[in-house]
Length: 108
Image (cartoon, rainbow, N blue to C red; front, side, top):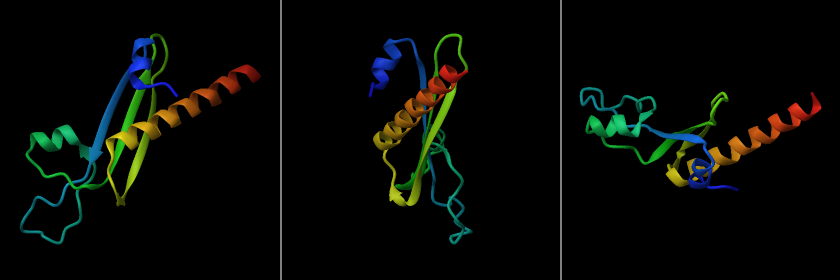
């Protein structure tokens, strides 16, 4: 399995975004559910605390002249969120997609 660094050296453009949930910011509604997923960067810019459980990692791959491929890994709210594990799962899914596409093209 190639690393992101190796893929970027080969000319792939790779974008990784991590999405997290935050506890309700409205003190008048202490029993409200957790917010929808938002990017970590946006949450930090607003000064929100990140919840350690649940989230998602979205990775977009693109080579020059081809359509971008987007894959995601979603973490259950029962599990602690891990950047590294999210990126690993996205890489596995992207390579699995590429192999499937390659087989389809060979049959055509």
